[in-house]
Image (cartoon, rainbow, N blue to C red; front, side, top):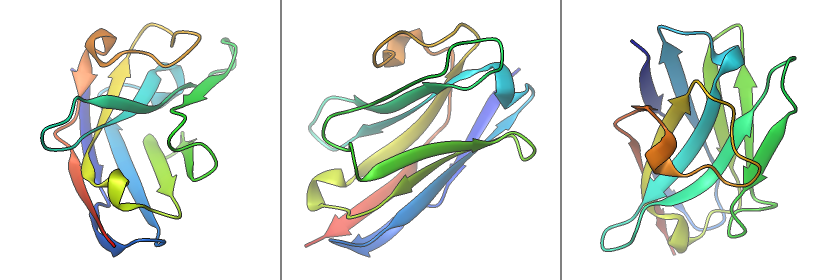
Length: 129
């Protein structure tokens, strides 16, 4: 059973930075399609970034337009951990951030939440202006 545990959220002022972590248990992160999603109160869940990184697959990383140039996803295979570096944070980035994983490769664009079979419980990010 694949389990995901997020951490790194917190409160920060606009313009600040945070780095989120998602530790994967039960499976090697190397062969998983991974994603970061977020959900703010009263808003629909949205994909932030989805990414494949595997020697046997074409690397596909897709960011939401709203975070391009500000957020960067990376993975540390040795630590079985996915990261999300968030810079120049805005109040609109306030949300619960959730990590997700699936065995199948990512889609060409953003891979939808519903297609991920494994999901974490999330870590809260609050950006004050």
